[in-house]
Image 1 (cartoon, rainbow, N blue to C red):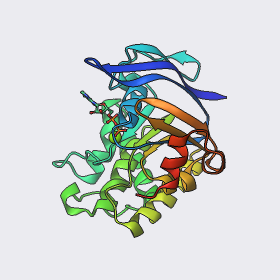
Image 2 (cartoon, rainbow, N blue to C red; image 1 turned 135 degrees about the horizontal axis):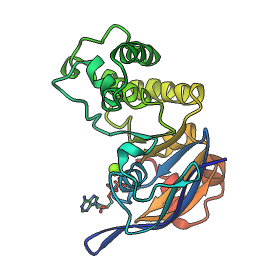
Image 3 (cartoon, rainbow, N blue to C red; image 1 turned 60 degrees about the horizontal axis):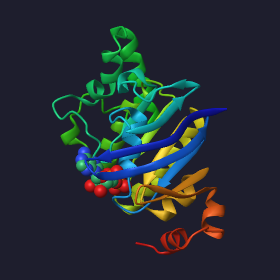
Length: 238
Ligand code: ADP
Ligand code: MG
């Protein structure tokens, strides 16, 4: 079943068209990467899907209902930002609880859900710490816990590993993957890292200058690139 469909979606900032008639569809439980160079419109696409931005054209459908102009808090999406965007004055537990508090979930239920998701990301003993007292990897785990606590239909991850060192990146990559499989989450993973997209994805969407150049499985993209751009981009390590 299609969980998310983008149909001819357009986004402009002034005269600058940064997302140009993008169409794609994602099935339930799929992990799809948006892969492309910096500035090609990946983050903008995630913001359109999460509702933080409204498109200038086209249509977005989630689970058979149109959400093109639905505000973010009325969509079943959760977005993890590249810089984590944790609230510095709140403890780990308060950060993670945030989405449930907004939804007026009872306190006792919040407490047990917070413990549950912190266990999932291996941070069970960190409830009372502040973000400033955590490493980059731990902060990323908190951001992940904060996103999954609301049981989103679609989890959106904007370059979640780019601020981590290589060893931690591998570890977090596997953790995200196992969590995604375990919760059967539909997931869109933004990256400019070819290898990351290759090892993580069910499907890769190659983007360039606001366009989709190719959509395919990792082997289709890497073994049969359909354009010079794709061949060049996936062939060159940065
Ligand atoms: P990526 O995430 O692939 O690096 P972005 O989606 O962040 O790319 O940006 C795509 C283009 O849109 C860039 O040229 C960027 O400068 C521009 N852009 C992004 N956000 C805004 C904004 N709020 N106002 C004006 N231009 C923006
Ligand atoms: Mg970006």
